[in-house]
Image (tube, rainbow, N blue to C red; front, top):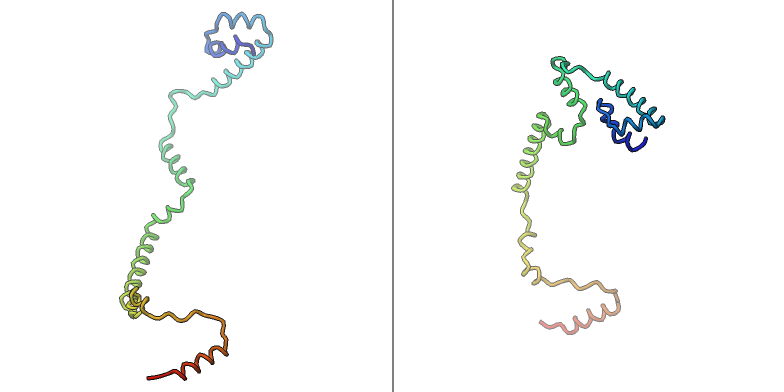
Length: 151
């Protein structure tokens, strides 16, 4: 399709062709064929146009909205908004909170909490580091301590 036809096609189909459009159509057979095909398509499209006084049946919009709601994919969070599930969730949370409270207040108090003061931990003697055991040296050490023991 040539430039004058491309630019003037819309005006021609609306019923107001340009002078350059008409001159080009008289001289070009290919463009005449294209314009004839587009006129046919425009007629088909105009015949499919609905009358202006046509209105949808009563309840049409309500039916459309209901159908959209039924076909909508529910998210995972919509489960939490259901009343039955929400009640069960509230009750189970209350029971769990009560059980944890009972456990915390009735459990025996350990002395571990009292002995975890840093000063007490550092005051205790640390066990000797694990070393390779030399039995002969251990016997000699015990013998020397027995020999030098005084009260």
